Length: 98
Image (cartoon, rainbow, N blue to C red; front, side):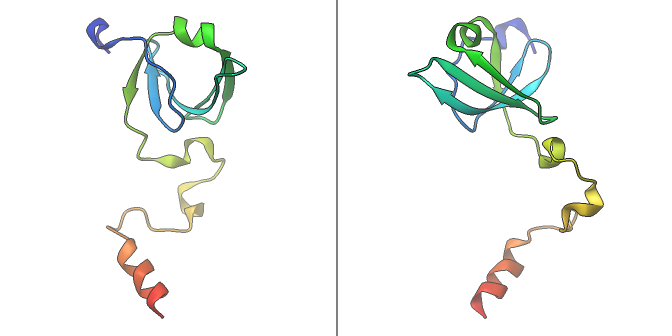
């Protein structure tokens, strides 16, 4: 992450960010009345920040990780779906049409 990419951003629930240490996290709650921001790192760790702390960290927006299992304590084999085969929506539609 280059210094030019870093900026002060408002927390948006559901958005993913990366800090200067390279850690990616999602904003999972934001309460302007209490001035708190709750974030969840990819590994599942949850942290609550006050608004002042959020304003002090420098972040950039990033895409959500493709491997959504980071915060889940499961192995790939336990996903219950074949993540390697293409678009599964077609089979879901056929099931719903029955």
